[in-house]
Image 1 (cartoon, rainbow, N blue to C red):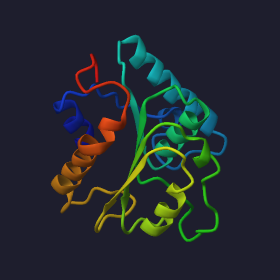
Image 2 (image 1 turned 90 degrees about the horizontal axis):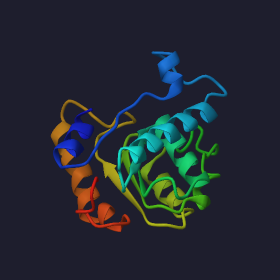
Image 3 (image 1 turned 30 degrees about the horizontal axis):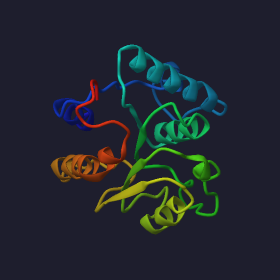
Image 4 (image 1 turned 30 degrees about the vertical axis):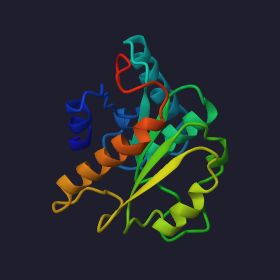
Amino acid sequence: MALADTFFSEGWTVLRCDLPFRQRRPQGPPPRGSAPHDQAGLGTAVAAMRRLGARRIVLGGHSYGGRQAFILVAAEPTLVEGLLLLSYPLHPPKKPAALRTEHFPLLQVPALFVHGMRDGFGTISEMQSALSLIPTRTELLPIPGAGHELLTKSNREILIEAVMSSFKSGFANSLPYTPNDATR
């Protein structure tokens, strides 16, 4: 929420939404088979933003939500202009051989990955290796001391500042259109 508030205060239009599985199930992990519905929900949210006049859309998500955003955009390369992925679940905890990278070579839009250096879903080294499979611009922002949840009591300001700095200094510049183009 704090990151969304900061993007909004910087002039970006922000839409936060719950995936369809979360709307049906307030707690717990997504049930098997929910991915297609969740991807469709993200697609519906993007379509709504386009109807409101948004010209540059960066689709994002945390963990499973980021993975569903990635899979959707890999399948529909013109859907959005970029991805902001927080704590991408590269593999299940303690199962580094079970990589979730089959869609990585299909991505055609820039992606910023924000990843905790103590994340059990993938080490920074594993993330760097996996990102080499993506044929477009990627950036990995490691967050020292953070795990899968990223935000801790002690890193709130530092985390938000680091993400915004990475986003504005290089990532946003690689998106189509200029920063002053209509709705951001």
